[in-house]
Image: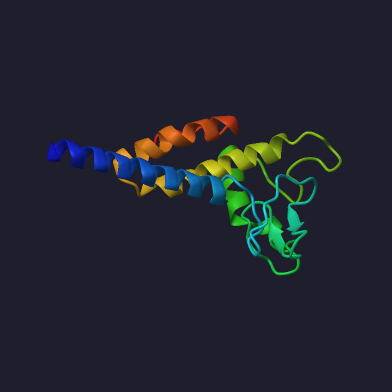
Length: 152
């Protein structure tokens, strides 16, 4: 009886921890936010050097780095954009998609890759059972965003 109780308690604790980790990933990785005030932004059009409407922070859309008042100097040399661009054999510049275009395919591609990388980083250190439970709970959110993770 005591063994069964301990097993149920362990399972409940693991599920609670997994749900907490999924909330953390959804909040900190899958929701784009200003690096300074943490205001969420859904998307943007145009230049990847962004300015937060709430706190006026200048930041990079690619790596979400706080660049002070203006991110234009950082964006062309953003290591995250360069690394993902090299992997996909494309160049992410000041404008991920053509200016004035309604096509958001390049930004969407970048975002899927970047968020996928960050999710992998977030779960990599978890024990196998915990990682499996987190991924089971997280998969609907990832699928909804078109993020496909290969084994890691």
